[in-house]
Length: 519
Image (cartoon, rainbow, N blue to C red; front, top):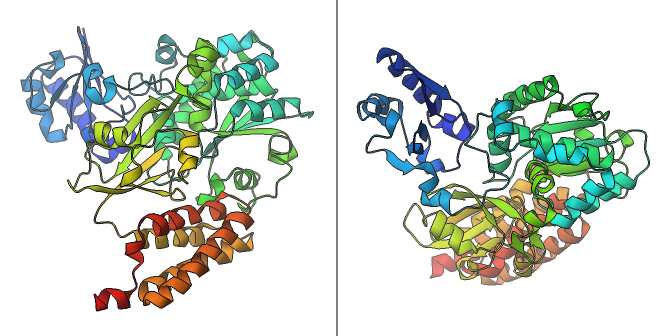
């Protein structure tokens, strides 16, 4: 009887040597004449322990990590195939504190199943949401998503049910579902983990969305830097088509839904939904004027639902377990769970899925283990390169959309990047403006010109004396307000957030060169 060993095929694990480890385990097993089945699963999200190898034992899965190729012979000597003791032993996977305290709904199967196996997906509750949706009309499906309180997990946090209802009510001969998988924010990797570790949940979510609004075709607009996700998605789509979950007659319902992957243009701006649509249509990725909204006039001029990966992947459990089940997680207007991605200066970077309500401090200290450098946390950027810098004094802010707005921040896609007290916040503010200048599509003047001038003004602030700094700070704040009020999309409209937060919370870092020299 063969023993099953799990070695991640996740891009993060591969970058740390997972492929060599999988090959070494298979080779060592053959040499020792031991029957081993190596399954390439997704990552559990404990990236400081990758590659993390798991073994299926009579008492459940046991983990070892981080494993390198040279560790494989000693693992066999320690009888790791039966949970033997080893310096890399982590114990039962489910008992690891980092995982045990999470509330994984969207990521319930990631790291557990074989992402290429449709049978494995169904054995772990997959496609039950679609089966439920097939017995409902579009209005009922949309109502379930609305009642669950699901909001877009891509940044804007707009209620998914309202967007779907708008598309459902828009008359048209053809409608589309578009998944924004152009995950470009710094410190984010949740979308990639789902697509590589549980691609069927995204396919199921998009199919349910198609049934809900009457769309017959879907596109996954995938970041071009994600070749592993592309292969996983295309293999899963082929399996779903072969088993009747996609095609002209989804599971005998008489309703069509087809799905295809389109590789993105490699531009940050194409993560903005209307630029994405322009790119999908084969045009240059530039922001469209709104209205009309994409839900009314989107891809090829037809009503289109656009949501990101985590949003769509959250839909199947809502239809399977019911709106109330999902809604009962979280608090206030922030319902359900949010996959939070811990990155930057941390001892334990990785993915944490929890219900809304825990604090930034809990995330950074209890899960992240504090800074990798051992120095105090000085700032945390939440929500990608356009997110505000949160000072250490505000770490007790709960993870909640409205709570973050109240302190001038945003949750965005759930990316959390930690900096210790050695960070130069003036340099970080400059980076935000420079990033906007580089990535701007150029369509609107506040973003195109304002970001370039912003870099120049920050340079003058840092180089000048106190009087010059005061004048230039007034100019910079005025410029930021122009960008906030006048930009066509969130790139120019949010690039001031990190700049203003750095000015407000870390003014000492903007002291001019002349002042520093004098002191």
